[in-house]
Image 1 (cartoon, rainbow, N blue to C red):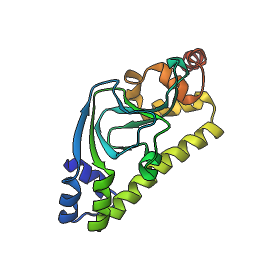
Image 2 (image 1 turned 45 degrees about the horizontal axis):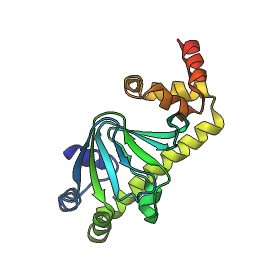
Image 3 (image 1 turned 90 degrees about the horizontal axis):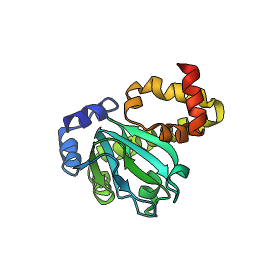
Image 4 (image 1 turned 90 degrees about the vertical axis):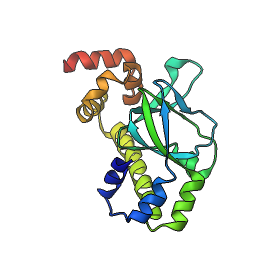
Length: 190
């Protein structure tokens, strides 16, 4: 779990005692590809750090083709249905792995304990909140200011390896177009 410490220390220095206190509460959870790790109407009880894998955030629908994908999280990023985590209310969306995924998770109860007993606690809470807010803000601005083609290009410019991991039906939903429109975008780009 030292890589998590290194990631956090890119923002702030941790004392050894704070790191030990925090890391002792992290639980490694392994998931197979295409596992729903949080279902609609469940209360999110974890904030997790992705050690390996890709997680999709989406609004489920009875008809699979009508699901709305609104986010992806990748290795070395935090993942949570954060609104549900904070408010302790049922989630309106689901989290699903798109590849074999390893998460290092801390429960709500344990995080409250870390907040109360370490100097580092408030920092990790703030960093997680800021990261999740920035992702949300970036997504909203992208939908308002960029074309679907720009969103597609940007997604794969930032993460080219995703072409092998994320099914195109999720990409089309994420950038806000039909699979047919995505096919036309891909032909223009190629």
